[in-house]
Image (tube, rainbow, N blue to C red; front, top):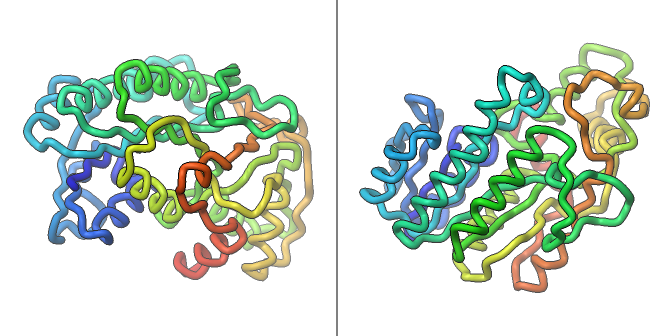
Length: 301
């Protein structure tokens, strides 16, 4: 099977490329960068610079390469920056128009598409976990709205699609909450972390494995995917990786209102119901506590 991965230089995209190669498949990695940050000279691997907002180039490349499965990781993910009026058009162009271009190209060559979405498509109210097939959307911010529009584009244009909502992703490539807070804990005796936003962390290599598992099937539809291990707040998450790392900085729980630094509203309930994965025969992700342990070891922190 030949794969094409957009956003291959990102935190998740990089791991998806690695997982594809690990299984012996061919992969075309794409991103806007001129050079891929991984090792380029590997059997079955090629890198192509691609701007997903350029429809003509996207269609041309797909027609030439003819992948059997496309994993669309490319997205505007700077949530607060997306709220700036000067950036909104660009965010829409990437997350909606770019996704539409990818979906149209997949339809043209009749290949599978995986679209990476987010808990931010929901309003985050209540305490009940969100179901994969729930259509009670009400995004709180621009990022969530554009990702929701991306979902709609994919589901309207295609039949062979997987829409995967995930949350709180951390990994070895790029900045994330874990690395940022460990750095803060080394520099300060006390850190303040929001305790009224609840969800589940997701380790990028674990999610990448699941995405390839899905592409090896035809069990299309909407899914939720985060690591197992129970729902926690950002505060509880931070306490756990500080404990594993051995940091002694005091972690102080605060409310979202007390934090007050974010331009974009965040959902307080990011609980995602994941039973649909097992119901369809997919292996769930390991518990997030184990993922933290592996991350700390692999990152050499």
